[in-house]
Length: 495
Image (cartoon, rainbow, N blue to C red):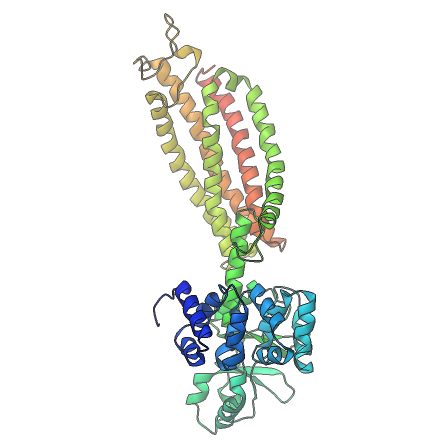
């Protein structure tokens, strides 16, 4: 099945057929050639979960160890309810502590009690400790099934120890070296150990320039460190600098996916979903969306206030065509700022830069904003002239009408090709183009200031910056438009 996309529906039917025929050998062959995650997706489709119990009762744990971890939470809960304590204990025995802790967090209290009752006392203590770490920290995602080696061991002794107990550990590709006081003193990659001389001490071949994270380090920062230093696993230490666990690359992949989903949800003003989209109820979806919509509605009051001023302004009353360009101004400002704020949030999230790099960033973005705003406004001036001359926008200023008929000069009657119309069209196009220059430039500058400011306050810029940006840019654009229109109307005799 390598390099092939698994058809989940066909796999579901195949598994149900094998279970109905009690074909244990056939099921084992499925596990040998198809990734466990795909088998789990197929099992999640079972209408009768009791069919799934057959797999766990008859197939060895070496095949089903990962299957339980990959099943949907509701399927796991139903499966646990159908099993005896002895069967449940056998499944739990094959799970890593960090995976089991993650499962327990999603279960109702009665199932949590039953699960913990069926694990040994030592494991129960470890799981409870994992559950007590603050959510989304290194401590909450770390594994405690890792291999440590004394720095006094030789390479041959270390390899012998790995062979004897390494299979029970979550990873052996990065080995953690401790001294007799159990202080972390170095790391050794498995390939370095294999090629080392048999009698050579680990203290001689280990890497001393290792990095660690504290149990309270945010999981996103852990992921960034793993990426930065190109690690397979990173050590987690407590406040006494003692090694208590490690975070492996598979956990990091989950963190990256989770953080990406949260950022996308935040940028869209939606609270992130705990479950998948299809598993989330309509009521819960509405609950996630409504608060942000109400917040943005309230923030829109500032825009309403400025529009009210515009509506009462003599300029916009006498030259109503200017009103036509308000949506364009607001959209262009928002689009310009949106591009920059996306880059800022991504850069802050991946630690490409921090608020300490403020002056470097603001200088670069200011130069970029000037170039972009100048090109946009120059194009906008030409385009708005075309709009007026082609009749896309009908200029209804009294001076642009035929004295005899009262008909407005537009391309449709051929009378707009005169100096009065030309001067008026320039004044209107220039008014909008200059405002666009200010709006685009300010949008990009504000899009830099907001995320950096929010990040400096130790908050998530994706959550706060975007709604504030939209409101601020709208207000700045409209206020600029009001001021510039008043000046240009007098200069070009538009009123």
